[in-house]
Length: 289
Image (tube, rainbow, N blue to C red; front, side, top):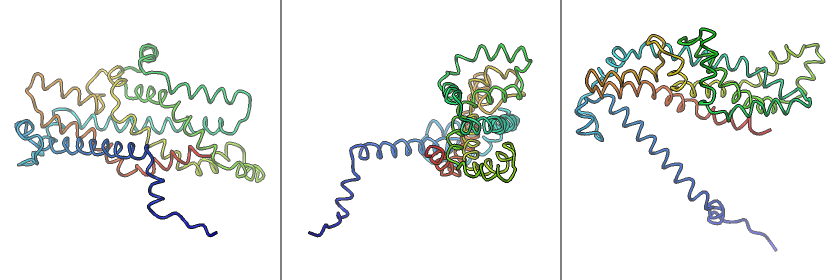
């Protein structure tokens, strides 16, 4: 008896599981909500304060681009933007410089301590930031690194190492061991093998880890509030909080405030739109061996 292939409706019924029927609309609902919030922030950033309250859901009658100029100058967003670039990219590069060799060693060295060290890095993911704030402040103050961009980079690198090392360990584990054996037969040292052979092959994972670190620290506020005390060293999130506090004394400049929010949010949104597929691909490759 000939077996007929299932028709398109049968295949469709097989895909329409309860999880799909509930999950897909929920995901699109969250995506639509986030898009609407982003558009509302962008539209409000080019409106006057009166239009924001009288017609919050309509297109602006006139584009008030001077909102961005006031936020950039009065809110000191210009200096804060430069500080944020220094801190974020310094953190991302410093984290990769330390996490990549550690992850490679954990994925290749097979000893009885290996699983314990990997578990130690994984446990670092579950430590709340509130637990380490006070000890970190005491240590950083004794090193005279409080109210310093370099000190903030050190804190960010220390708190980012567990996730980045754990992520890259899985990624290095997907690379074939035969390449290292071939390099060893050619006389390459372990350090040269890592630098010239394995590191270029892990470029996808390194780029993904770099992007994730940039996204994580772009709008970080908690550690910035604790370790940054002067206005000259403020990051974008701290400049936004400072601009909000100024409004309590100088009048409510809601257009400038929304422009400041847009300056903080839009770079991250552009990063997601531009590199979202690379992030997903990098995380997927690193998760499957």
